[in-house]
Every structure is written in C-alpha cells, then in structure tokens.
Image 1 (cartoon, helix red, strand yellow):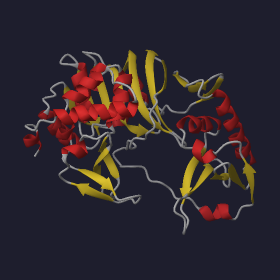
Image 2 (cartoon, one colour):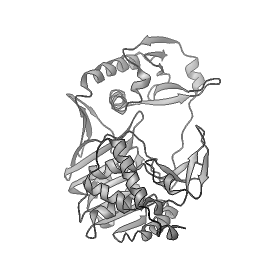
Image 3 (tube, one colour):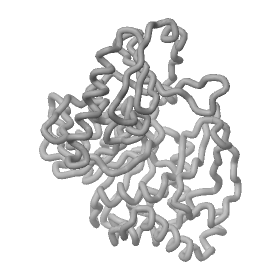
Image 4 (cartoon, helix red, strand yellow):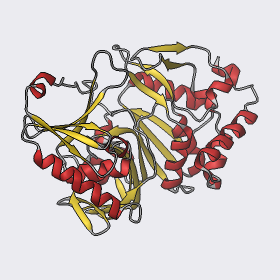
Length: 380
C-alpha cells in the first residue's frame, strides 16, 4: 500500500500541515524545518494508527487512514504492546518542529536519535543534514526498526540508518555526534549520551519528573560541563524502556490515608490550575523533590481527586481542591512548602526562565536568584 502511495501527490496536504503547525505556533517555521516538512511525506510512514476510545484505556485501530487524517498536527499512536498500552507513535508535528528548530541542524551534521518510531522524524533530520550528514536512529524494538527501515527506503533517505539497540547505552560506534535527540521520555539522562556528544554539540530530551514533563536543550561546553535551558513544549513522550519492558507501577494504599487526621488550609492561588502549569510544577518539584502527583478515582465522580504524596514519609500527603488543600497526618511541612512555592512562583516567573547546568559532580537548575540540585543525570 505504501508503495502505491508514493505515486499520490501529497504536496497540498504537506502545505496544509505546515500551515497548521505555523498557526499552532503563531509564527513562521525556520526555513530549513519548513522545507523538511514540505519535502518528506508523512503518509509513507503511517500504515495504520490507533484512536483512543474516549477517556478509556482502550484503543481502536484505524487500518487505512485517509490523507486528511494523517496530515494533521496531531500525534498518532502506531503500536500497542501485549497489554494494549501505546509503545510507539508518530509525534505531534508542531512539537517535532520546535525540537528540530532548537537542534539547529546544519549540512554535514552527524545526529543520533533515540527512539526510531516510524522513521518520520529521522527522515526529516536526514533531509536537513543533507547528503554529507548522517542520522543514526536507534530503537530497542526490532520490529519497529525493521518497519522504520522500510519506510525510509520509500523516501530514499540514504543518509539515515535505523539500528536495533538499547537506547540507554546510545550508539557509540558512530560517535561523537553533533546532535542527539531523544524522541522518548526518560526519568534520568543516561551518561552515555553525554559522553557520545561532541564538544559544542546539542542534546535535547524529554525528562519525566514526578510533577512535570520538561524538554531540556543542553550544549556541551567541555568534557564535563553542559549548560542549557528548557524548551517551551507542553507535552510528554512515551517513556523509554529497557529490554525487560515498561516499568511496573505500584498501587497506592489509599485507606491508610483515609485513617489519618486531617485539616484544611487556604492557599493564595488555584493549586489545581498551577499543577497543570509546567513552570510551576517544576518549581514545586525543586522545592519538594520527593513529592509526586497521583489521581484517585472515587465512585460517583466524573473526575479523579488529585493528591500530592511524599515518598520519604508514610502518611505525608495533601489533597488538592483548587485554592485550598486537605493536609493529612504529619504533613505540615508540605503545606508550608506549597505556600512558599506559590509565593516564589509569583515573584520569579515569568520574568525569569529556568537554566540548567550539569558538571561532573552534579546538576543544578536555576530560576532568577534561586538554585537547586537537579537529579536528572543517571548513574555510571
């Protein structure tokens, strides 16, 4: 079917997609990124995708998607695992565009991509680095790699190589790289990625924190130091997994919290809304690094209750109700830190953006005149 699609004139659809991306971003794309989206047909990389059934965890296949469906500024889930969970997608094009612009790809660059997916993003980068450049796209899923290779063959992307391997280890054989882009989420940035990056090289990845999903852009200043900033992307990629599969999630024993004494506290702002704001959530994560957000569904309610739980202390928890919280047990420190974080956020943001600095010994994140240790680098 894809071979037949190569004869279809999709240029009008590609133009429409670029226009939709630019409307979403409220600005024109950088010329090189715009040309890549206009040159690489997305339909050659998507035979089928899956649509979510409302708010459920079930997905319906769309086996023969129309060009109208494919050329939208929307992510398309392209593979489910044995448990029906999404494990591969074609990312939202506007998010891809922001990352490609931030990479600042040049002709002749050597690029490593972590997460081959459908091969579409690798093909876009291959177009941008030109014949003298090279893109190595690594994925742990051999089936995805085989499919990506097939897709790439349709676009004659001879400078793009899809390979099987553990993304945590990267692909040292072709290092050092001018650019490294992870199209999956990670809890920690593997040190192997830092080692495989050239001095002056740029790394972009999605770090999945307990309270926030952030996209960091880091430049390697020397062998031990990287500095950078956060990209203005409000999204979350699928988490990268090891050969053993996706990490298991432990359940929450809610009854132990129900038995604790509690009291209500008033806040100066709407915490429910703030927790949906990446900038605030990241600040709260810096102040309370062991706190995570959890949802509790209760019978008869359309929406789940939101809780903040502290890993280090059994019973340390707060329940969020817009501009007030219910404080459980011995959690006064959480109440105090939440109030302080709201006041700090109102003072520091949006006048100042976050900056990240990584050295051999530690990682730090700074906003304004405030700095905190930032545990985003994995062990050796």
